[in-house]
Image 1: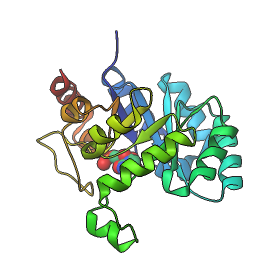
Image 2: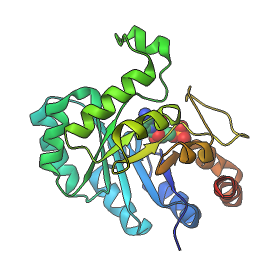
Image 3: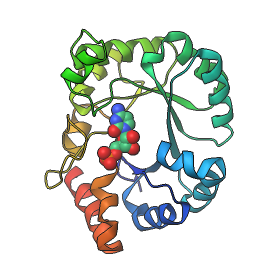
Length: 232
Ligand code: C5P
């Protein structure tokens, strides 16, 4: 049976708790995503332990951004953990993305376009003169030409990016929120169903599911189930 196109963001610095989240939600998600919060505390050993428990593909969201040599070496070492996806910032440029691709040929190097937490004002402040949409499409095309096989973008930019890059690239969208949920620090949100309809292959969902943990395992499952039902 095909699993729902949901990637669960495991943003917690604790292998035990992460393992409980993984076990509670395994029937509702295709993949887990381990990011900086988990990785910086639990390291490669934590990733290996969780992989053993999860027994599903995983996404290593390290958002690498440094000189090409450093990113290439980092990607080579990250590849030893055998993630399906590994993120780099597209704004690191062609050579940096290319270095990751060359150093981790078995991993889908995934370029983050514009963070979904940034507004147009935030972008102007950090020196982008284009709109978020124009900047994201430009970065997506750059990443494709540098050899990236997947992209992370806002659901609002998904349709334009899909049109620009074609069908072969995998598009993953965070910044999705079920209607009943608050947006946390995500500024440009959309529902999971709308993101998939716009051309995303996967949606990344964290807090709308994981924050329910404090209300118990069943509350967490109910939140996941509600999102899966919304995708049907
Ligand atoms: O909790 P929430 O659903 O907001 O989780 C979103 C996840 O997606 C976080 O782990 C965050 O690091 C990640 N992400 C994002 N925006 C991007 C890339 C990744 O929110 N552009």
